Image 1 (cartoon, rainbow, N blue to C red):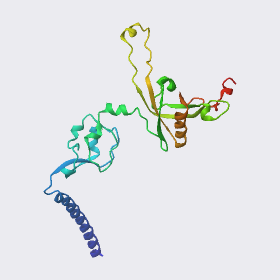
Image 2 (cartoon, rainbow, N blue to C red):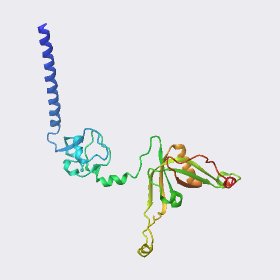
Image 3 (cartoon, one colour):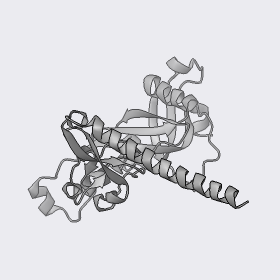
Image 4 (tube, rainbow, N blue to C red):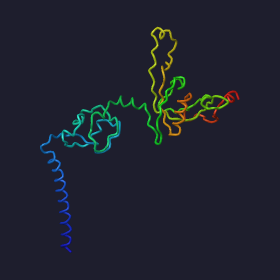
Length: 251
């Protein structure tokens, strides 16, 4: 009985020693592989780093490793202090080297927040519209809009003539691009009784997210008809719409 116990203990000890020797050998193998090769100590991501993570927190997610110099990019981070005051611009995944090009000033990241994420299963499409068709340019990323499409009789082949219909509702706007409004002349600014919101100049590019079947409707309307957008919040009443011909305008 005692012999069996001693044998079991000896087996456990041998297993532990063997594991330690194997780990030492593997570690030594890494060093042997780098023997005679210019090596650089770089930081490698060990745990996913979410976008917008501050640089002073990055040390918790990375480890320093020796790598052949020829396998190290020019912007590899060799000193975490070089990232001071910056944040990760994208998610950094396990196994990748830490690169300075993936870190930006917090202000730069804030500018990109104007674009909203696309919901799962949807895709984006951009339409170019005059300001009056975009609620005077008062639509921003994150808003939801109604899309009104008008088609004339040459497209519809409809005897009553043109047709207008609020085809889609509660459509998510993911991005809006517009030229900056022109500043008012100094003389007119002095004579103005009160400041007003300057209207945008030129066309406005509005990007929306929708499923494939609705994307087709939007593109058809842009290609062969005219589109208006309404600013349609989540509590807007969307009932009572219908394809409208001239007979329904005064009815």
